[in-house]
Image 1 (cartoon, rainbow, N blue to C red):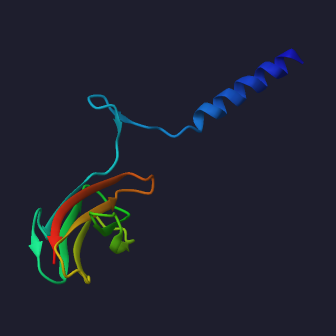
Image 2: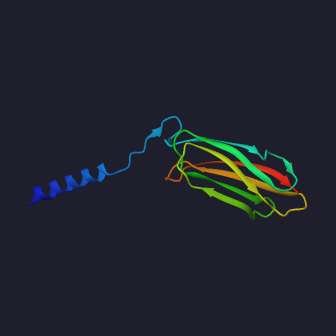
Image 3: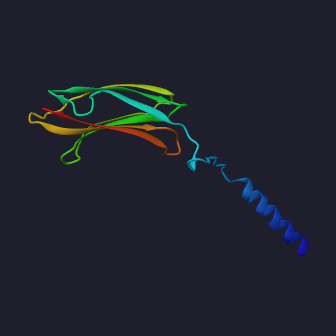
Length: 134
């Protein structure tokens, strides 16, 4: 009977350790390996002053297939969202070209944030641009 319990404990221990997800790490940084991306925003540019409506343009170039991206434009004075769009697609590269309309007549500081979803585990890459519209 004692041999049965020892065998059961050994089998349980082996099965529990065999089911753990392997997380490889980069020894120099101590971070998990996952895809990366370079986000380039060509329009608007940092500290631009734009009259009227505008387009958000740029690219996202990943090291492997990504899960999609989100474009958010907020009023920098009160953090209210004036535009948000999410693209859910599985590609290694994305081209961003989205038209944004607004009703601001006075000079208003805005913040553009592009967030790339690198994988289904929640890893992201982001880029922020500050600019002014009127």
